[in-house]
Image (tube, rainbow, N blue to C red; front, side, top):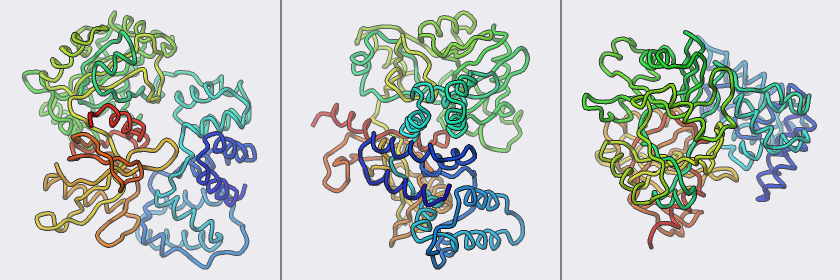
Length: 510
């Protein structure tokens, strides 16, 4: 398959707002792709590359542009192979070698292909081919139910691999994907409710749990072998020996549990999120950190028990099975009710205990791995959103020399991001210094004092309501937005959507 086919499909998908049209155009391309090409095509059409770190900045990309080729000659796999070589090029002289690889690639690309590659490699290629749409496109191309493709993708965490099986072997290929020990699955996610009353109106009788402001964990246990995975499905077992110890003491011989690890003070109150995250992602002496900043493990769901998958079981049954083997002290406080006053009192108690709020759960819902459906709803005291940093502006006065004023965007399910405002409120000197360094790593271009960045960073923002605005595309803007924290534990695909923002706006009094 030629890269030009992917480029033309990408442009065609971006030009239509029709979800059905997007799906059909994507499916048509996937039907033509070979087994080795499907995964690459899916990644590129979703605005991503398969390689983790390319080490290529905006200036390098611009410097690699060459006189475009008149005739398309680049294949999809040739582009992927070049990017693989780019990633593996390291050591002395590697910067020059990477630049040469890019120049050779761009010299063979047409003008249209060059533009596509620049946007792809800079992270600017964000159109309507997001994962939800792509799952349906794979299903359409393979002639299979979208639910079956989605389930397999959630279990394996690799839509490209699932697509190869679906297109090559049909239903039989998908049937091989099952819940396996020591292969992490994506965690089930929650949408936002504006209040306990809003949650009850949407769920009816529900289970309310304290929303712990810690790090999401997924624990896999088989006898004495235990592994712990993060929200991003990374193996963090070595970093969290307390969690391993807690799992070893549980009554299950074999299980996969969903939970939270959190740092508490001596009175049992939660320490700031940043304190918990010090235990992850740093190369520190684990035992030293364990003594200085111990973690406590809480478990709130059970997705596999004693050799049997619990994914399709209703939440109430999963929880009952969990409670049989996990002590109350190791589970977040919980209340099942349909009474708004009772739920509100429970919410107030969670806030007094120092927690974020509550999570309301549908008692009959299955465990939807990776899905942010309506079965789980998070309820917080203040209005907060997890938004994506799209750009930042160089500061003035005390903030001179630092990137400070952040441009904030919500995820658009149809593709791309919808800007909702700017803020530098809530940023300490330490955070300003850190974010400046980090944002410059993601720089793609500059316009005056504005540095545009790849949409890689998720930040939690508090705000005092939303107001109508003729400036921003959604017609909405955040009021008095302020940074709460960066969410390094979240992928951009997990940011809040513009649909959630509109729902909050609709619930906010004028």
